[in-house]
Amino acid sequence: MKVRVDPQLCQGHTLCAMNAPDLFALRDEDGHAYALGEDVPADLEPQAKEAARSCPEQAVVLF
Image (tube, rainbow, N blue to C red; front, side, top):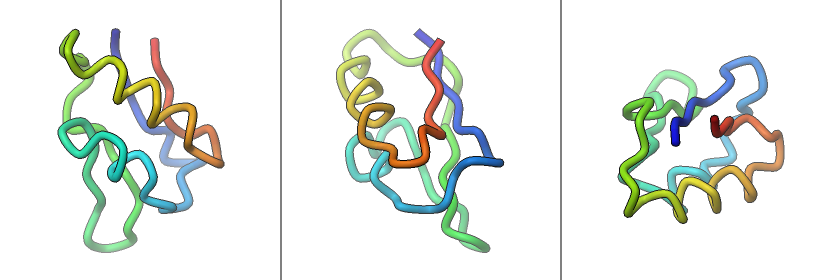
């Protein structure tokens, strides 16, 4: 599984980073999220799915 955050959709709600701190971080300048890496380790897939599910803007994209 791979993950990314669509920067055009992210509004900085921080839910992805709260649900999966090993996969997401927040930019200092605007508080918007970004993926720490594209590849999601198998043991973190449940957290990635929860981050995508909880994003109100649907900015977390799993593929």
